[in-house]
Length: 364
Image: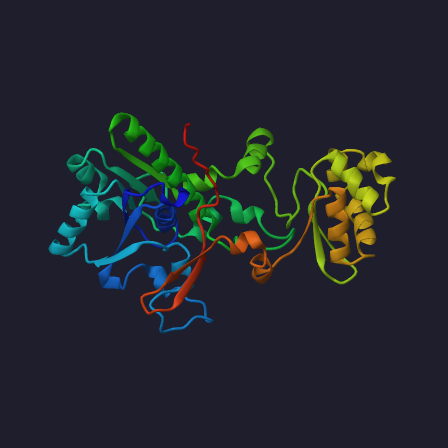
């Protein structure tokens, strides 16, 4: 039932790369009819050509493109051509939702801007994705630029090392979630009132809204977060990694005093919580290096699998560092894989964008 929830909903997607297409795929997974308009003059969405060297150069699509383009119809149009433009407008006017990451000036020139479409169809929900909050700022902004400009890269990396970008397009994905939430609110509003809506978000605003505790620490104390690798600035040991006897790394994420006592008991260091410099989280953060030296010496005595089993039975949050092969050996990861046949007959794979489960119970 969940995957048919939006059956009958029609979505037109004027978007490319990752954020906008991820929104379209979300609705496709939930049963909506999603038609993606691709630029005929450029060979379609630019990510069709973003291929890893391990991919076939002859394929019309890339694994990157596949990641957010499942379950859609694909229509190649030249919106600079009057006939194609008219066709696109007709489709948009018959839709429930339009998703666009066109620059506002480009959308207006092609007649598919929010004002033009909503004037003709007041029930339409027009969702606009931009780079920056100022609609007049049409500067291009790929994810890496936003990770740099919004402070993420400055905080990310090893102490003393260079800033590091997240290995997924994090800001695009955050913006996709913001746009999905806005569309869902607009659909609820339309259900109640019959009114459509024009809504928007930007990559920059989406990034800023996700700075969370790092932003509040700066705003409240003036502290500028620094690169700490995987470590947490406010909790210890949390994000700290240690080599085990077999050379494998284990990561600890101890977030409570009880968990710290369980950790110490598990490694035969019951006395550590009794010492003033390790007696509470604040003290452990201040004396992190000394604490990690003692933890590291103990953890080096046994293998990773031994420690994972011990910590799991004792309620100590710990993890192994998994590569993609290990990740998709997990049953819940395999259950989230979606398949689809490409136009050339090849089988394509990607992970669902929908990660929630809803049970609809009839009223008896």
